[in-house]
Length: 121
Length: 121
DNA sequence: TGCCGGGCTTACTTTTTGGTAAGTTATTGC
DNA sequence: GCAATAACTTACCAAAAAGTAAGCCCGGCA
Image (cartoon, rainbow over all chains, first blue to last red; front, side):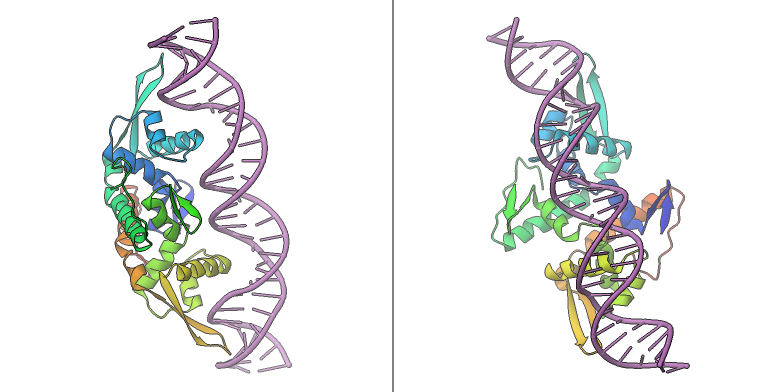
């Protein structure tokens, strides 16, 4: 058992998963890995099925863990921009592996996945 | 949204994660990736913190998804052997990436992770 | 003036996941 | 004969993750 910031992890894999676990984080990162300077709704509209609550939550955690960064463009009409950080980008082999494995699996099960605006490699 | 076996997935990544998501599957696969012909208790004793209920559950799902296979050695005293399948082995780049990323992160935070019987690369 | 879009917040509920602990069958070992 | 071990099963419970739905502030636009 590994202890870090008063949390316990069974192993290093567990540590990594604490950043990118959950249903949406990898999807958000994949998106920001391809597109830069994204607004909240742009991200939302590219993740079919996500709720705004979830998106906000995940974005906050990703920002806290420094995988993405948020720039506030203006306050009066509140406008923001999200971008992936170098740390976030360092995970891209992972996204690619997961995606290709999934595409391959789908192919073997008769589903030909066509990219949704190149969202997922 | 992708539909397969009356489940829905937001994307191929989601599909892949459905096999290896959860707290223990990657750890079990990592273990079986290194050790072969493992009995139930051997696996259990190498996963600090796992409950038997969880282990049984995860092993069943991994078997169902054909990432591992179970051989029944004898029935009267019930004895089994678990092994990783080629499909399971094909995920090993993933395990290695996740583990190395975690080890690296820990190092940057002053924790020098020492391998537990080479369990995790 | 009233509605729409952007970027959220809040409260509440449901679903999923994980944990505890006891019980089961059967064999081996002292 | 008794305890220990292997490989589970079962029931019950708590916590975490995710979903639903409504509301809020602000500015632009017709």
